[in-house]
Length: 134
Image 1: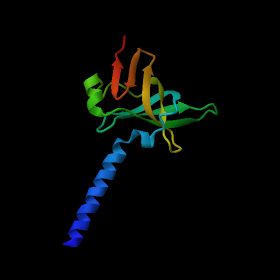
Image 2 (image 1 turned 60 degrees about the horizontal axis):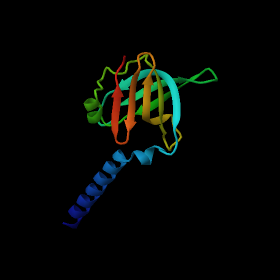
Image 3 (image 1 turned 60 degrees about the vertical axis):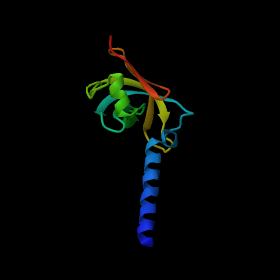
Image 4 (image 1 turned 180 degrees about the vertical axis):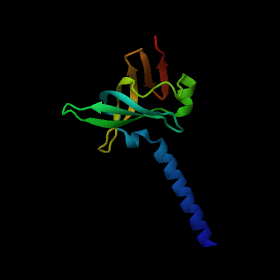
């Protein structure tokens, strides 16, 4: 009987830690810093729980880096008007966001602009705001 209780307690602890890790943007990203990058969308994954964009950013040295850009949760993005077709491979975007605390090419998007048509995504407090193209 005691073994069953230990397994139950371990399962609950793991579930709580996983839920906390998933929702802890501050644990993964440094909101005290802002980074701006410009690049070309290579992939837009409009997935649950958090959509993300993969962008190729050209370097001064002539090479390129892949960056992963995380967005707000899917449900709120849908409510704000985004779809799986909002961003497409080849779109040039300018993004400002909070960099990952770990040394990686990853940002939590605070603002995303697509200059070609004026599309703008902005994280305002806890909610996304979208300005549609002209």
